[in-house]
Image (cartoon, rainbow, N blue to C red; front, side, top):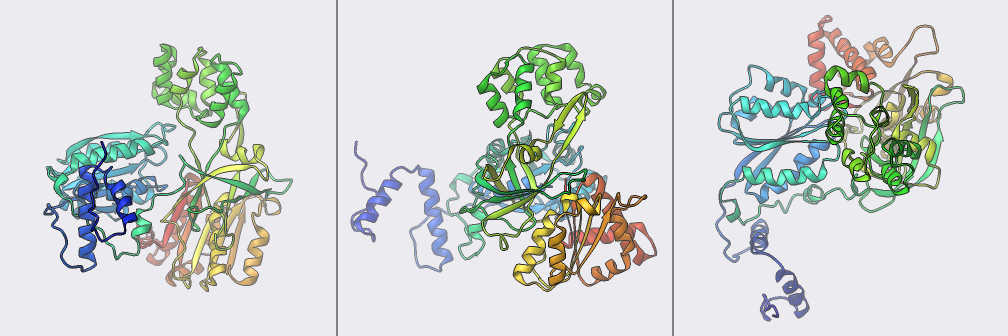
Length: 592
């Protein structure tokens, strides 16, 4: 049966336009047509237009508070994305960072949606610590009757998988909240499940008559609309294929380090980044390790199996969920004993997946093997370039990871992917991971203080290049640490050129092994504390990039001590001042 035209011939369009519109509208559902009616009604109202066709009366929209606790930006991205979906369900969403939340927000909330990541061994993200601790305290207010749902993000390689989200979920219930939708705990391959959960959770939180609210509220005058609505074009699931144009080991021949400068041609629409962002890399596993895993479960050198292990699956991470799944699949009670905390900690220390399969030998089919494994996750690296200085390129700084344990040589998946298995001219799959909380000041006259060790210097190369291209006049001070001056001074010539041009105002270095006593960047900070306080008083922004458990934590303590100098050494005052700087966006950390 031929569909009847939906627009009459006398509609104010050309005949060709009428045919196109009819072909589109004929395939729509009643819900989609109602949405379009509301959209155009809202558009006409925003333009100050005259009378329009009557649309169904708008139903009151229910308020929704979306809280996120994010370290690498995953939870934040999910929270921002949920706003559009919430609107479709008749919910008026307000997105709030845990760093900006307080008890008044909880007291006023009617519906709460939480996206919470777990950092390290069960800790909340650094920006979320204060409100998280307050929420867990006895001072937290009751939220009787408030409906909520929690999505937890984590990494199953850690024992306390998704602990932060789980504890927030339990705490909201203990404070009198009503769980509108069950919590979900997601691993690194979270994207698809998170989208499905968000749709269902918002459906449960939606007002009962949300389906009748057809006028769509859109700020047509907002310059941020297009940016806010655009989804990332390239993700870990659909990366951009770029070309490696340079691959250089920056360390000298006598170094104990191996640090690779990688340049990637990524000139494609939709691939853009800012200094401070991270570049995600989708690597491949070591082919030899993929073969050993296949052989350990009796699959030999099956070419298709080894290829899939190399390209698609995580074949290194040894986690408790994996051991639990393996012991259930094989019915091995001896392997199941590894699930006990002490036994797991003892066995898993410096071991990988292949060790489990070799220790508890079992023959598996390819389907059984793949069912145990999670997808190969991308690896994030702080971008080491400015797109203004290097159009169509992204530069990375990658430290090769190698070690030996339990009689086996081990290698970092992505770092040795570059160091051992990639060459100039080879392809590499990449994507951009925005880091909105690690940015140079918009005011180019603001001083900046950059602190990093080893590959933690990467983002500062981009910062200084950006400032040079924009001709910013603000002072800049770099603290850099490594092992030896002769072999490990990364980007030394570039820093000297920036000093000569005065784009970089000052540099202090700490080479830990060039003298009998170890000297690190925190020692240089303490030595320069009077000048640092002057810079901070002048409005300087401070940045720290590097290992959270080592350098970054020591720098944090040292900065708090330096700030305490203004209060006669009161450590609590110093720590409070550091938190104030962080709250104001003047103390930013990119740690791992």
